[in-house]
Length: 403
Image 1 (cartoon, rainbow, N blue to C red):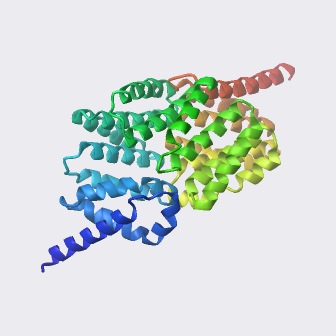
Image 2: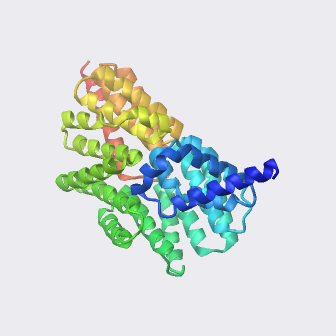
Image 3: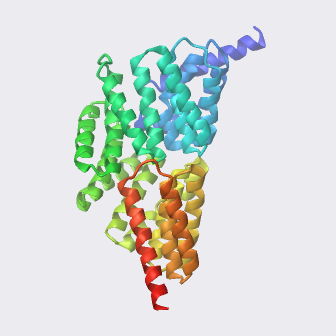
């Protein structure tokens, strides 16, 4: 047997092994897969290079995307998805579009924004060309995620509405039902952004009902996490805390690193809203920033450092606050998150005011307003940040009048 034939046979056996292992992969099976992570990567990598096994490799990596998100390095695996997509040769446009969308998602999480958008746009083109309605709606769903993550909720909303309308024409199936739940969850987040909490609650409760019988519990728990966000907006703090503590227990039970960090961050925000600064700090310190750095999760790093800066401001630890906020601003700029940059700048301005660095405070306020001015759509959060800036500028003006 030739070397090439031996290699091809090895690749095929590895792909079959991992395809069988991941047929019903969910959070309960991640520990089983962990010892094989490097071999899984190699199997997908080598399989993606051969026309005979490219489709199998693509399907395998798509089954593992939630596992990758929770326990792997975004940048490292985004390169793998890109290689498989670049060599994709199968007559299956639906899988190709999904592969490109997930490539975009991982690229975005790793801070590679231009590459992310190119992948998302390519997925939409492939889906539209295929004339497969489910593929098109899926591509629109991921594009909607991109707009939402970039704080462009004015662009996300009509896209998600179009996707929900198109989904009504898709034949009923397990995949279409799951996609409906995902879209409703995203729609709820967008409604929260606009301050329509009643509509957000309808969408979340409908999404929870839709996904209650889904094979994967991942999105079902994600909906409960977002329901906690809604409860915070509604000032239903006890309900929010109960939901978040339940989600933290679930994340710890299954070692869901990304979801755990995200949920700790939201619980921190709950205590910040209640001005319970010691509890907020205690909670926020549970976020493993070193682990997030190893896995390239810029968004969670930026949010944790922003929260730490804001908490230390209110504990009057001004040097620590300034350091954390400067680091969060740097991370938000890498992600081009204008609203988050403005929010962290507003907090930095408050630190500078407390330090009596009044000129620097005014400069930070001006910079924050510049970033707010670049937003495509007004949101509840943007209005809150603008009020913080206006209050600081009023204090500065009052001080100037008395000197």
